[in-house]
Amino acid sequence: MVLRVGLTGGIASGKTTVAGIFEVLGIPVYYADEAAKRLMNENTALKEKIIQHFGDAAYQDGLLNRPYISQQVFQNKEKLELLNALVHPVTIKDGNDWIQKQTSAYAIKEAALIFESNSQVDLDYVIGVHSPESLRIQRSMKRDNISRDKVLLRMKNQMDEEEKMKRCDFVIYNNEEQAIVPQVLELNRKLLQLAQQ
Ligand code: ATP
Image (tube, rainbow, N blue to C red):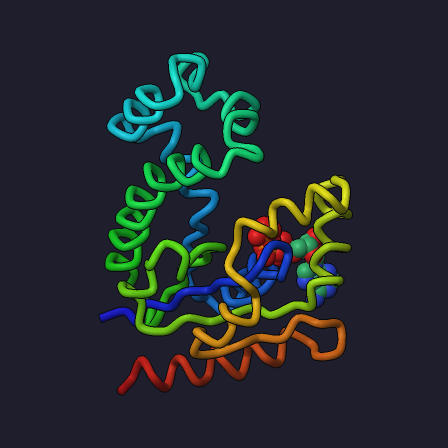
């Protein structure tokens, strides 16, 4: 059976960058954020629930009205939690179904919120990508072309980075001092070994 590995980290910690290196090594990766976006457009039961709670304006021509939803949940913790409570279980199930179908020694599920949504229960190991907060803020501002305040607001919704890393089985340091490729190669070797046991 395929070994199920989670990959997590804070905003702009480098999860997608690290996942891309695993993909180069031939390891299949499920991107939870991308999947959630797809499921919100394609999963009929989920769409119905979103409309029920957020109104008809949540969809336009069958597709999620992203500006409307963002405006609804931005700075509204309860509505954000409600949206997450609808989307997370569907995405977790979709990811679990996907991982079961993989035929590689191990497969990776990349998600910003693993412990927050308790999805580590369906995973054998979790890898954390650790990056200092100052660097994450800089990278996020540059990548998304947003203000420092907006980045800080987004970060507020996530579990404390140190706490998250403590709960991970392996940590990759993406801090401009340690190169990430050798760390991924080493971890790949370990995971292949663990998959054989
Ligand atoms: P999010 O969860 O916010 O989408 P993420 O954790 O997937 O982010 P990435 O998108 O991989 O993070 O990285 C954030 C930004 O920082 C990207 O623009 C990426 O190219 C850049 N970046 C990440 N790691 C490095 C690195 N080691 N060297 C240079 N740039 C990097």
